[in-house]
Length: 459
Image 1 (cartoon, rainbow, N blue to C red):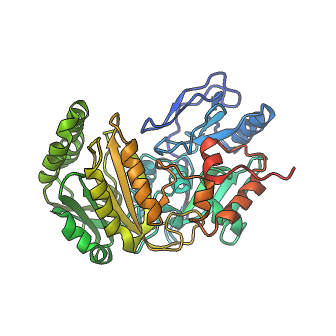
Image 2: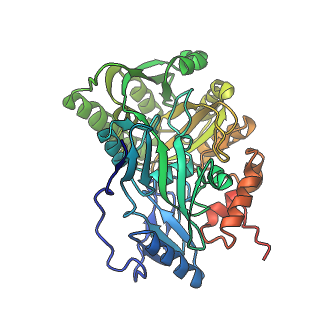
Image 3: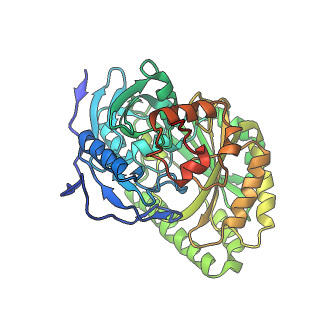
């Protein structure tokens, strides 16, 4: 039975969303990008959003839709243009549990979407480990989760509605405007404003979580076996240590048996956030202690086993701020990449206080997906906010360049359009679609100019 639903509870209404008189300074979650837009607009529907775009065009301003700001790159930075806040574009508007097709507003935060889907007996087949992003932002930057037989969030998209630079709203899918759909499933916000997303969801399911420490070299030696044997596999490794935390999540036919509230609070809120945050603060204040502190943190990892609703297992709270770079590699080279990274971290003058995260994904056909055309392994490096990271990230990028890595669009990297064009077989086609739907580059910013190149406008 199909169901049409009212959007989720709206945020407070902007008294004048079409012609705002003030602009809010913008900063992303990782505090790696800041901007002072000329104005901030919070339209309540597509008509008002189209008016905002038209007014920006008349005033010679660019427009950037902003979500939760969870990208570490400047992909969403509104710079000196118009920040288009989609806080009113939230909630599920149509659902068909029989087919699993669900249409939701692009501004819906993932944690809101997950709860609403669960109420309908549905779930997303795969998720990342953070649920604060908006749906449009997550698919537009390549959020991917983990699973050797599963793709990222963009592979779950069946159709999109976009508001284009000329103010028109267009629908696209594999059958309708297929080239626009192929580009817009992961479009970096360069093609238009995603107003609604239609997802192919699955019946809600329980995940069994098995987590425990293991020697890093043992994990690397069995990396491909672990990826193949589990629905969702990942591991974390503290630089300067020899141990990893391995996470295996698999579908379970039984009911949820979550951690007790007390243990959940102790392990996730106290140990992984408050206590680890305090340890990071000590390391930032006394860098000489970072290496022994990292080894201490790795030594305290303990096993845990539970099962819960899928979205509660996929995602975990992240209270500690950090900076991040992530690259996608051909899966077969990931163990050697980790060995090279381990050697590189020992040569750094500034030690690393945050674990490395390794995940996997199935090859897909999304034009700008980091898993396009190849089974993929992801390696993400982090550093605690306020600690030196440039040398570390540069060393990682050097390893990534030699191993055929593709940078995550929402994470920090230094590649430009020339370098990226050689990593994506459909890069030129994406640029052609971009040029056709936004010939004036109204949705561009400096980041998009760097990674995509300027709009090719023959006029």
